[in-house]
Length: 225
Image 1 (cartoon, helix red, strand yellow):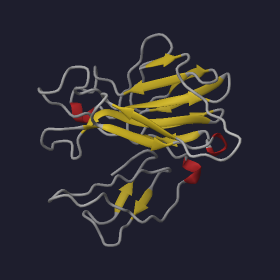
Image 2 (cartoon, rainbow, N blue to C red):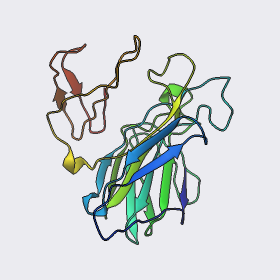
Image 3 (cartoon, rainbow, N blue to C red):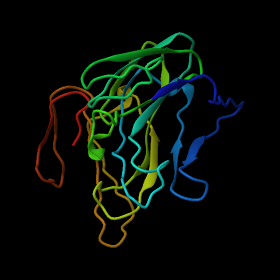
């Protein structure tokens, strides 16, 4: 975890454009991209979606088993960021505090500063628990937020191989109650996986067709199945 001054770019055009952020784990493999939302669509409340790190003795140390994380970019000076992680989050002891699960962390950013917070590897000893997913974020001004994992495998305990994952988070204000759950292209006998996150306490989710275990109950904001 850390706070970086500089390193982000602001793009402005005189006609509407579409923009993507492209992030490879290395120059030639395991790439991922995410569409970027325009500034006027950014808000102050988010829930982070990410995935646990994949671990393999065949991966180099700089890509192996790194905890999932979220990034925040401030749009204005003197922006206060608060986060409540589902699992302990790491700190750098200076600008970013280490935060216990369920507690509240806070720091301040100026315009275009970058905050990155990862799951703690000191207290979350199992790699499967080094997942920042479900973290609740609130700021006093609109912010840009991304959830990511350096190298993830879905399912977590699958065979060798992993990929960089990232996605810009959608503000809670835009969330809805009914969705069509599209799946990825069919490949061999692979299964498809969805995660459903709660934006409030006591959320009940049903699916058609029904999926085991049937009705999902998400007790707390940020919980997911």
